[in-house]
Length: 287
Image 1 (spheres, rainbow, N blue to C red):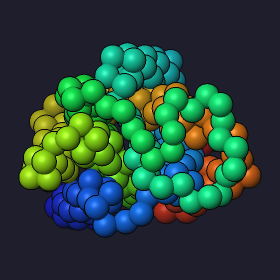
Image 2 (cartoon, rainbow, N blue to C red):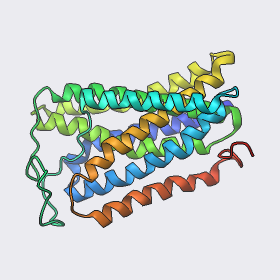
Image 3 (cartoon, rainbow, N blue to C red):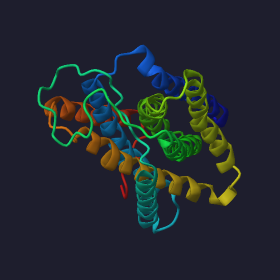
């Protein structure tokens, strides 16, 4: 596939990402979001993101970065991505995924650590500002990751990397949009403002992805290093999202442990299966 083919593929990815982001923002209005359903999806997405970050992004980053210290450099950028995402999570607390309105009756004794009764979410009127800023920066990172993964594929013919990144984004994006619109709804904002915020948010990742795909190609001899560093950085950011944001939210409760654990491993298996569309040897260093 030539560069124009990868550009067309990026356009298709972006349309799908925007669509699922819009869908996520509309979920509370069109679908019954019970507590257990939300936690099952969150656990599954955490498994996908964990596998993508460690099995795809980090190895590809090591492969792209030139020089004999590529491994150390990639790990350094992964550390930077992890640390920055920790700061963002602490500063903005931008993920609130559970806006279910009724309990589905699957658990009789909720964990005593629950802060609010099921179906009730207390939100400060200005909470949506921090959530939107945090998720805006987060989705910019996702867009840059998607753009660099397509740029890496355009140079070595690998579609598996971009497909795995797309999968992680497209599964996670509805939760992000739900965090914004759900918080705005709980804070009393009108449907018109929630729809506007949802539409604007759905466009951030595609715009960042296209700008990155074109911009990286203008870097000349620095292209390989920038692509590799960006992929390793994204690996750290996604790793932090999976381990310090999604999984703790799932394990906050004691109920449904088996179902949530199975959903987590199902996400890992699904992401791992994408290795069969990778070029041979892409995960082998020193072979």
